[in-house]
Amino acid sequence: MRLANKTALVTGAASGIGAEVAKSFEREGARVALVDRNGAGLREVAAAMKAPLVFEGDVADAGFVQSTVEALAKLDIVLTAAGMSVGKKLADTSEEEWDRVFAVNAKGTFLWVRAALPKMIAGGGGSVVTVASQIALSGGRGSASYAASKGAVIALTRSVALDYAADRIRANVIAPGAIETPFLHRSFARQADPGAVRQRLLDRHPLGRFGTVEEVARAALFLASDESSFTTGSVLMVEGGWNAA
Ligand SMILES: NC(=O)c1ccc[n+]([C@@H]2O[C@H](COP(=O)([O-])OP(=O)(O)OC[C@H]3O[C@@H](n4cnc5c(N)ncnc54)[C@H](O)[C@@H]3O)[C@@H](O)[C@H]2O)c1
Image (cartoon, rainbow, N blue to C red; front, side, top):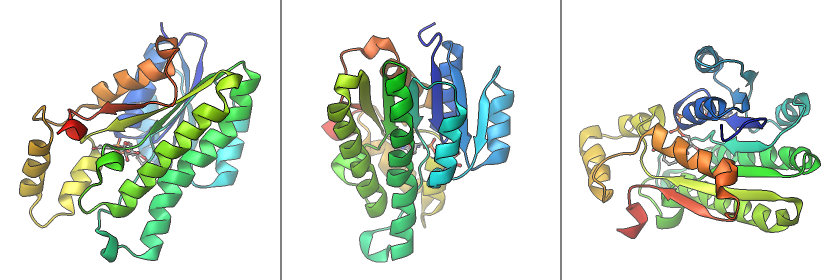
């Protein structure tokens, strides 16, 4: 059990990557707090687990963040997987869309990590794992606000790694490529020709396929656990070679 006696909080836990990460953390012995705004999805994930704690709300709501973290007796691991995209080029992006994408992806990372840090420090240290995207580094077509917000996640995480290393906090980023989740399928559905976009994206991954939530969860487990004890400030690519291509 790689996370025995640990308490972990996972945002975006009602679906996709966050749901699989939450289940895998529990299998490794952690007490897991599930956070998402999707109550029905949360209940479904919780039903497949042993004894999760469930918190329904918006990750960008500072009051919700504070009360959730305060409700936990201790906190060793925080993983921020809640995220969204409007899937638009820059000139097509409204100010409201930009603000919402940044509220969920960037502020929704800032608030949780900020709230978690004092509790983790009080417990003697911990692991922060944030979720960016392969296109935070490469740039991405039709995703300007999303890519920019994920760039912010990387810079935030590396800064946390520097500022809190002396407190025994490690902070690392996972940068997934295209992963088979509802998020990816929604992004195809927004396109005029979803099949063509799907094929173009497949071709762009040197491994020639999309990733699975299990592959991302294994990376998350590595970064959350002591297996990565000398790893901090890193961006772990789980993107099938996208940025090498
Ligand atoms: N799937 C991919 O191809 C891919 C690629 C790169 C990065 N990512 C990132 O991985 C993370 C997880 O994505 P996924 O593919 O599992 O998506 P998903 O849509 O399956 O799950 C995202 C979850 O976040 C929740 N969420 C969104 N906004 C929220 C808010 N304001 N408050 C609370 N919960 C909110 C949703 O309800 C959902 O349960 C995201 O940050 C996404 O940007 C995904």
